[in-house]
Amino acid sequence: MAPEPTTRIAFPPGTRLALIDLDGTLLQGMNAERIFYLNLLVHGHVGIFRMLGFLFSLLGDIVRMGFRPAIGSNTRILKGRTPEEVRQWAGAFGQVFLRKAVPDGLRAKILSLKQDGCRIVLLSGSLQVLVDQLKDRLEADILIGNDLEVVEGRLTGRKTGIFPYGPMKPAALFQRIDPDGIDWANSWALADRISDLPVFDLVGHPVAVHADRRLRRLAREKGWETIGRPHGGRRP
Image 1: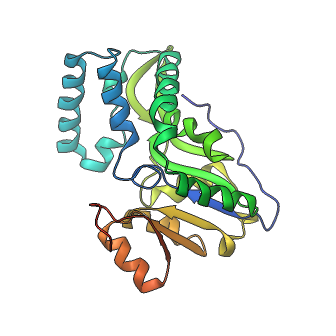
Image 2 (image 1 turned 90 degrees about the horizontal axis):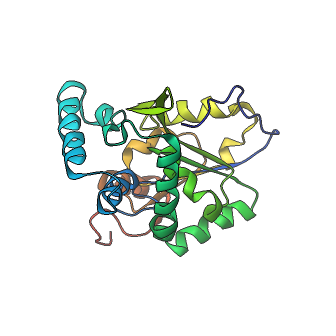
């Protein structure tokens, strides 16, 4: 739904970034997209049969494609809707839930990086319309999520572009920015899973937030900063 950037953003030499994940990191133990779909069901924007159709199609995609590719492509629940409808629903969801779900302490950490001169980049595999809802709360400079495919003014039920997950996160980032001007050694990354290692490898200051078991162990070995409780709610 977001227009494809025609040129990459070029920053002045020495620019520092703070790369921030959404699901599981800003939202501990939660997936914004799934909660958004449940919110649509609860508020009557989609019916139970549409939800069931989405789940069945997702299961079929998982069998054919595997779990992550299926999650990264299927939005059948939104098929036939207009971009304007979805933006309106996402705005209401952001207001009542998404912006409030980011813990104050984690927000303070991000804003401190902003005040220290970092450009804040939200880099997530969640829907772009959901990532956009956190722009003001986190004073984000760049927001990168998954776009929805539109044909003749209606959503097709599929996503388009790069799915920013695992090794594709840097690819999605470099599609938007020119990496040459970035001071990577003094940049930061905040994420919760070992699958975010390709992003951690870019920066000099990785931070494990609500980390899963493998990332928590790696963070201890590397001496990385850790924030919050691990997955499952138990303290390490």
